[in-house]
Image 1 (cartoon, rainbow, N blue to C red):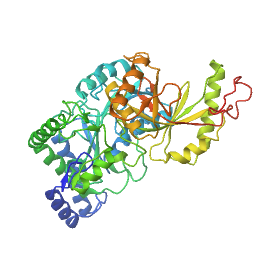
Image 2 (cartoon, rainbow, N blue to C red):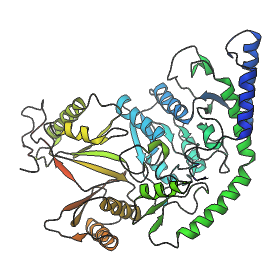
Image 3 (cartoon, helix red, strand yellow):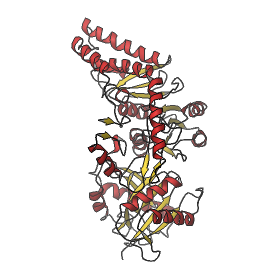
Image 4 (spheres, rainbow, N blue to C red):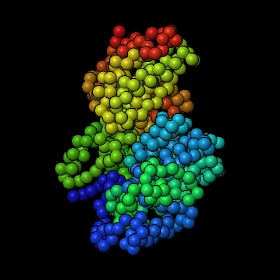
Amino acid sequence: MIYLDNAATTAVDKEILTSYFALLNEQFANPSSIHKAGQDSFRLLSKAREQILQLFQLTDHEIVFTSGATEAINLALKGYAIANATRGNHLITSSVEHPAVLNAMIQLRDYFHFDLTILPVDADGIIQPQSVQKAIRDDTILVAIMQVNNETGSIMPIDEISKIVKQHPKAVFFSDTTQGIGKINAHYDDLDMFVVSAHKINGLKVSGALIKRKSIKIIPLASGGGQENNLRSGTSDFPIHVMLSKTIRMALEKLKGHSEHAKELTDYLRNELIKRDELVINSPVSASPFIVNFSLKTKKASVVIEALSLKQIMVSSVSACSSNKFVGSSVLFADHIMIHFGELSTKGKNKKNFIRMLSKNVRHALKNTANLTYVATNDHIYIRLNENDYEPIMRRLQDVSGIQSLSLVLKTNAEFENLKNVCLELMQNENGNTFKVKTRRADKSYPLISDTVNREIGAFILTHTDWKVDVHEPDIILTIDIRREAAYVYAKTIPGAGGYPLGVGGKVLTMITRSDL
């Protein structure tokens, strides 16, 4: 088997397995116990903490052992934001973060009423330091930017971003370093909080840690016996935690050799891929050598992956943490439902009341559906489906008064070359003969006007498919909504119930009708 999905997980090093089973057999006592066996376990655990800090050359930080990066990320972000809410209300992250970061930050916004800024990336999928500089405010308390993107391999300038954050005394800087540790050279002493996951670097699964400055106050997500310095209660799986220390040491010792080998393979792969016109490489040249992301213009990724699997070659089309979602990648695609209000002639207080009541009724209709994320704007409500099936949700929403229509949309980076490929892939999965492109440029700073976007993307689709343009009665209207944080792309719209939201009464004067009446 040729295994090329190491960004998802890695094989456990045999030396780690041997040491783990030996430790598991020899010492099993609870490190919280005061008897000799328990204290022996405690000393091993304490030594592991010290070794990890030494490996990262840290003196002002402490270790909180967790079950992996996802738990560590949630503990860091939620634990810090909630504990420090009286200091400020503003959070910053990027649009390409791992779902563990992005969904945690969105939850802080939606349920704990923090003000959240989600920064876009540039054409290389990188957060530029100046965008952080522009976004940071006097009330910013937390900035979360990843070190290496898990899907494109883009390396973020976290050293420069850290310097910007340090200029604001209320703010701390967190970085998801899951894909960077053991793979790229970096200094970690400037990071206020970061995480490590063992199974990304040939270690054991269910093993990770939050590494944070001692001076940073966070609250625990789970209450209990007060283990891990009162930050993560529960009986310690100390053999797993002790092995994390050895896993990190081995990864850092092998970093140079592994990186050089990965670069040789990546350079060869890139040179072969650029020879093929039907492929587009999404990863920038400066990306981590351990990740190469490319798009297929004429074939479905799922079909290619299945064919490669039959040849015992294992690759991935999306991050493993997102592979069961509706479509595509959380960087290149995201699953959303867009609720259209229609045109409101009322303004100000009336319109705000309309949106408020409609949002309330939408949430009520979907109250039994867990793990949805809602974002209301002046003209749409976006619902991120996460791992939910969209069909039953769409059916329930069709009965909610005040909704003119519904669309299943793809959220993507608005960079134009990426946008063209996203639109092409969407159209390759639609049925029909004719289409037209309709662009709404809500972000007036976008470098291309709507007509140019329509013309260029239409021509791109014509070149690579059998679709024909019909501007009068097309089978499909490919709609592109360009906003500051991202672009939303959709091709189908179904009618809603129309009318106005229950509970609004006479405050909204304009009736919203169904789109098919």
